[in-house]
Length: 201
Image (cartoon, rainbow, N blue to C red; front, side, top):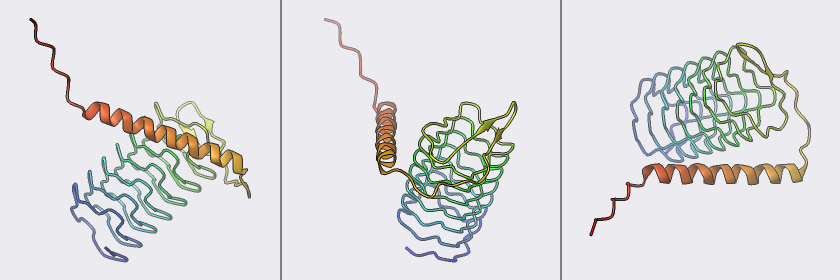
């Protein structure tokens, strides 16, 4: 479905199946999309200020240039999402999964990143000024240099490499796939019903 430029502020889409929809430049500010399926959706330059995507599935969604200030992405699946230059200032990203996401030039100023997973994400030129990050995973990054301050994360200056070695990129994609499989295995183990105890003879 195509919602390009639509005005959907304060809309409710809890647990809705919106897989692959186009919300390019749409206004979804203050909307509630908690636990919705938005896998592969286009949200480029969308207005998401104050919106809730808590525990939603935005796997491989495209959020380039989106304004998601003060939004709620806690527990959200953003694996492989593309959000360069997106603004997550003051957002809640606790326990969010951003494995392999493209986040170059994005702003996470004053955001809560506690226990979020940025493994293999591209974070070149992104800003973490004043962000909180207890338990946050930062591993295997390309084009990234982070300085850990005593009470805040400070983003490296905006500096991008013109090229990436093919071999390193292939290895990065393999690590992303392995991490994704591990996450799926954990999810299945949590969802599986407990095995009843054997009856005594």
